[in-house]
Length: 454
Image (cartoon, rainbow, N blue to C red):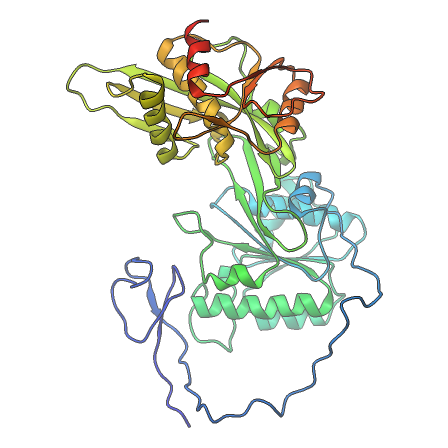
């Protein structure tokens, strides 16, 4: 028999090493290598072509009924999922501690249970009494949800096999689960991988919609092996700032729907409330036009969301080192945009501090926001407000050109619905029937001339 070999697995990236070392050679994290279950080296002479059971193959065009999605009763949750829960699917939901993952899933479980479906909620972090206290605060005590506090995967699967198969199963969280067939403490790479495999196999074989709650690292990535994200069908991120009331549920991977769809919630005293019009949430408090403020129509999947971009320019005395601070946008893209404004438009930011913020704590990555950011910067530098009730969209190239963006017409129509009457962007954007007074800007210099002459 082959002699087992020791191996050490990085808890941050899943890299395997055959000796312990202080720093992982792949991700450069310190003190993350933990001894894993021994791996047995098998001889290459083993023949795996016989001795197994036959696997059934079916034709791709085989007629049959497609599985129907199960609505959760939370429209924003269903939107992010692509239309609802798919039977036999595995969903991984990550988010910062205290952001509201358990609250959201408890509300969804209660709504599904009230529709007459069997629902099971297994908590590995809280006692049953603690979950019941939260349910009472949220007004969900009357929901027929089967509740358990357990961490042993064998015990959980045995119990589920002796009761009515649930339509919806929540495991909170996968990092607390433990399998007695695998060496290592809960949360280690081998335990997370093994426990997730057993739970996902149960869900696939019984047509159960499974949700696994995942912890995140300090960088915002889901803790545990990267293979966990490959094993599941849907990866979701529950985002937001504790200082703000809004929460965003974002689909990062979805085998049954479109990615980049979002659901928006607001944290209230009685739980999470759905936000049907998130643009009004992010644009609240804009009574008077101010210098350094521009509105950008962003796209999240199929949903346009209007955001306010704020800029502040502070002149410094000679000799001081200027500071660049960005909240909600890419710092490198701001540096590039400042360089284009200086090189192509003749503006000077070298002796001034630049502060940029996306209002509401929203995190923006759309390159179409370049023109709105540039408008806010020029407005702040000139200390002149932009035209009232106007939106700005367009990607800026290094040559100072304003390039077209995707879904320009959809963005402008959403802005018109919310009372905006002016739009500024690239020359080939189809304004269509939005009703906006649209102005074409071919070059970034056209923006500077318009703001400076106002």
